[in-house]
Length: 95
Length: 170
Image 1 (cartoon, one colour):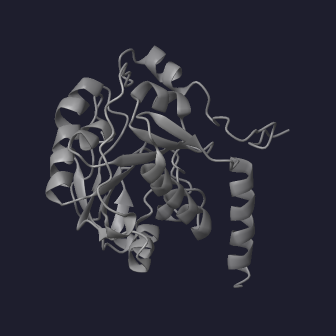
Image 2 (cartoon, one colour):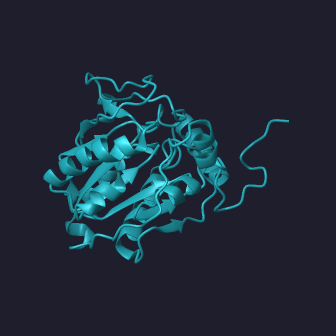
């Protein structure tokens, strides 16, 4: 999909939680996150993380120099979940 | 003891390892396997002037549109247009092949339409295309997908006047 859009002259980037699948599909640019499938932009209500992942993708879009370049982010799923749980606790308390 | 993702997790390590091989072993030829890289399209203007299109395999679609065929044995090679101005309450997911536990509570974890609207409003990006594009992954014939659906969406995205594309698998 990404390759078809890129061929029409539109630069593309994608987040990936499956580095091996991305390595086989060879999209022009990708950002790898070690997250659960279906959670490419993080965890519920964690706006800051969701935003950060989009911004990392956009930064990679601007700075990647070689086709197929995969940027890896130094984030763990455990950390994302922990922050998500804390945010949910604050939400529940109405903070 | 219950296993958790914290058990020995290291940054950079894929949570669900060996995904490509697992699926391809069970359904030979169903996974995309390219041997070449395609040339990068150049970014022609600053991000703050670029109109962004979001393309997603999440199966997110406006309520009331024809649901994706999530049980067809070979897949559904159609797409839906999702107005980029849609309230999240007007959207729903029709796909069974990925965990929607997070997305069911906050759609932005897989379809970050609200975050993208914020970035456009702040001027980080120049704007959004009128529509985003959605289809379902887990189609079993990657050549057909490349020949039909990928070209159909690429043509539509091009007509929308997109300058850049954020594409997200699910």
